[in-house]
Image (cartoon, rainbow, N blue to C red; front, side, top):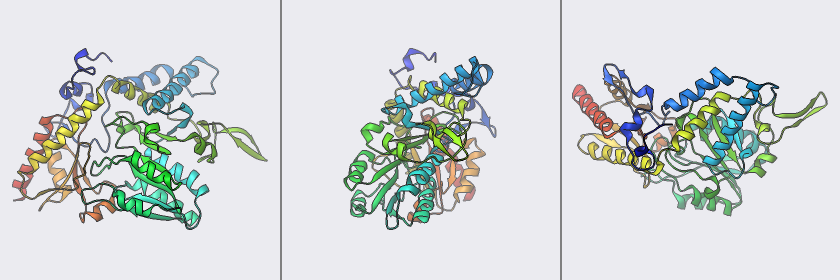
Length: 415
């Protein structure tokens, strides 16, 4: 990446970074695009697009089994991507990095392979009210299959996990706690290292859904102390259809395969089969080779950016939003967590979130509306859904100004 030295860990210039993202250089409905739906998916820099294109143009082949040059090159790139992810999250070994389609599949893999083979009647799984449906429903399925019980962890009114309530729920019946690192609906940053210590004190395991955290902060799975960590590539400026399950090696070794097929086997006969070693035991079939290469390119792109400065910039945009919201009669922010990434979730009196989202889109402003796959959380706040503006490193103060100009226009239209 030939970015000017002034942008490389010296200053943070969102407007300059914006030029790295081709999709942002367009107009929508006659206005320059303001993309504020980053919690749903982030846009892709040219470096990622080029890496995927170059793979298909020059190295397209299946990995691991080919006896030719293209397969060798594809395999090197694919496994180098795994090493890159391992370094990015500080995994002790790369074989603890399992390729999946995204965080949803990763959680389902753990719920099926670990959960259904570990849980027993009377066991408990603790899941916070902040969770995405992807970190609720798989545990409900595992509980239904094993006789275990899913128990919700209360949250504070501001939208933080209530640690006192969690402490009161933890006992020897709890086998797993599932929480997100960052809430996709409110932006709450959860104290996962502290939660890990609490969970391990009663002998339980901790799964952390890192889908929303991975693009906003340094993730160190060893320092965090979790047992499983999952994330999706498309929320880290990488392509869709690729994600990561990280797990403790001893746990992964003892878990049976999630799917059967090619690559995940050692031997196959009609009298039985044996399994490949990690990580391949969990990677049946042809993998998303281009996706892994694209995700690795996204990680390389981020290596040139001061992520702490980017996070501070995003929080500044959130604070700007909170300040401007004070001048909008009838606008109510939903949640006020103690520590948050740049997510501003709100409702506006007299305007349905979907209607507001449509009016903003007509002005070239992309936001997310609805329950954000967090229906229990919306029920907690007694709202059907919210409008969510979620900021990333390429958003600017002008984007926030445009958002609130659009909100004021909507208020005038709805009288």
